[in-house]
Each structure stands twice: as C-alpha cells, then as structure tokens.
Image (tube, rainbow, N blue to C red; front, side, top):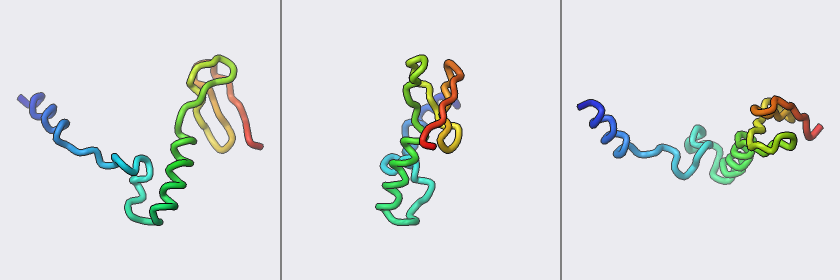
Length: 80
C-alpha cells in the first residue's frame, strides 16, 4: 500500500526549480539578470565534456582550471 502512495505522491509533487535550475538556491536574491549569468557559468562548469585522450564524455571539473577524466584518469590543466 505504501508503494502505491509513494508513486502517487511522486507524480503529484511539483519540481521546485523547473524554470531557474541550478540557481534556485539563491531564491529571489541578487536580481534576475545576475542569476541568469551565474546559471550559464554554473551549468558549463558542472557539465561533463568530451575527453581529448579517450573520446568519452567523462571530463569533469575538479578545481579552477583542472579537468579530470573519470574513464582514463587523465588530468588536464587549462586556462593558466
């Protein structure tokens, strides 16, 4: 019975950050245009990129200017 309730609740429950995405954590603060710029930056830095060594989409940002591939364990420094 609880499984059915959980499934129904999951369907009814709204997604909290449908429009704003990752910058929903800022709420109504800082203004819409600044949040839009921050969203663009945060989406690009948190997404995965294609590794130049193995060709898999597994490059992820470790720190500022440091990108690491989770498949072939290569680390690339860029923008220095």
